[in-house]
Length: 637
Image 1 (cartoon, rainbow, N blue to C red):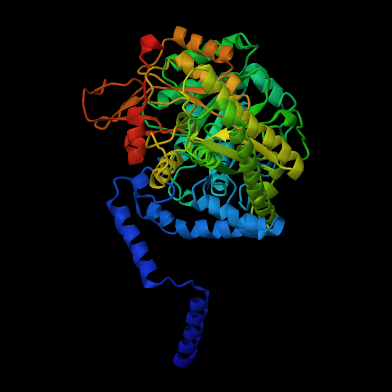
Image 2 (cartoon, rainbow, N blue to C red; image 1 turned 180 degrees about the vertical axis):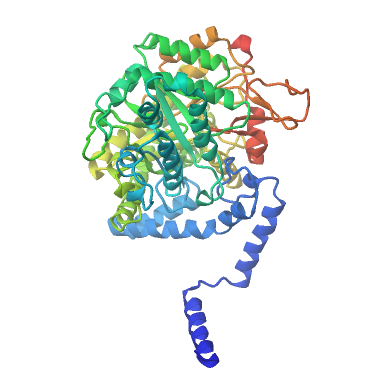
């Protein structure tokens, strides 16, 4: 090709690129340049983020900056797509209402910057059958422990790239045990202890590594361990592709080994993931598997960090750090040929209602002149308007559901096409935040008192009842979650202040009690997150019991019994761990200097909400919130 012809080809190509490119004007370009400058000057990645600050982004670098740069554009595209669906299903008026409520900060759609489903608990059976081949990968079905773990790491990275939030694999340890027994016999833990530790290290450290497909975040990965009764109910009919079945005694031994090993490994590195949930059945008085409950109490007393889920029946799995999804209608539907299992659940999308703003808006509308709140006079008005608002959120959620159905039909959701999960087994979740602040505005004292608990229960019941009605009407699953709101709690408070609403704290609570309240006892908190108030929170809420030091085993035994007696289904114990910046030792106790080398150059780590991170990685506002948290003295615990 001669020079002139090549030049002409280049002109045509440049013209084609120009026609495809959306050109920003100088003001918009300057805005992006200013963002880059401000990001470079930020204290950490969370502070540098404009839209989605979270503490899982450990370092500030060009990859994390690039991920943040065009989130404003991504949000607009996602809203446009959803509005098109709402117009198609309902009408343009509803689409306009959706945008209006978002822009007025009455509601908040989570992870708008990513056009993907929210969170998921997957069945690993497609991986056992075909490896990653149905997911666009090259790895075939694993045959040995090493190929299982290597392929599993790739699986989690692949899944995490296609969901906004967490990915849960509740079968991980059960399958690990299966391949370990195949390769090394029934006594593999005793005879190949070092090898098993190496296999676990490979997976844990690999999955705590930031990844390009996650905008330089590590995957949000969750696993579960089970007592005998929970395990039998979930996996009693499970059959591996090679015809083998789970061996409970062997799985139980591996679970205990893993828990102890993971706790010890966390003295060497701050392994954020996996977030571990221990699932146990109780009979209303005590844990049914008493030996397992004793083991869990011992682990808690040794500073191990995990969530505990307990109920009288096998009804739920956790797919996020607190998001609980019912599986009662899915139990024992295991199918060997299809690879279906009773462990698939999650949320397609989460839309959260700003309860403080909602309540204040309703009160302003129903009272011509400002007047004190009168429950007998005003509560039914609030509940009536709440029902209307939740119905609107359900319609918005249907738009998301239809959008993802279209994505799947056109091959954009390979996790669904490969049967790791199905849309029919995921929920559209109604989130709640600012509830305490709204209750306080009405004059309630947020604590263990009859009036406040009755108010909370009425709010939750109204949402739950409306969920059930809409679920029948639209044929989709709906649930309610008291959302973690790592950055949303700060956003709602800021936005409400700007609009001159009554705002009493800089970060709305993520619990049913004020985290800073020193008058509340641990028992009060268990009651507030107990059956009377959370029975309608079918999407989950988590009690975080913050303690100044690790409790003794006897105290942990009592804590488990208190959870059962109060009907608190989901909780964890938080003790700030001490990280030495000199020698790197991580102490499970809260200290003023390193217990190993004596250095005072230390940092602390705790759960920002659901997962463990250095406090210095929190956003500035979350660091203030953490500082205000009340940690109970051991004598009071």
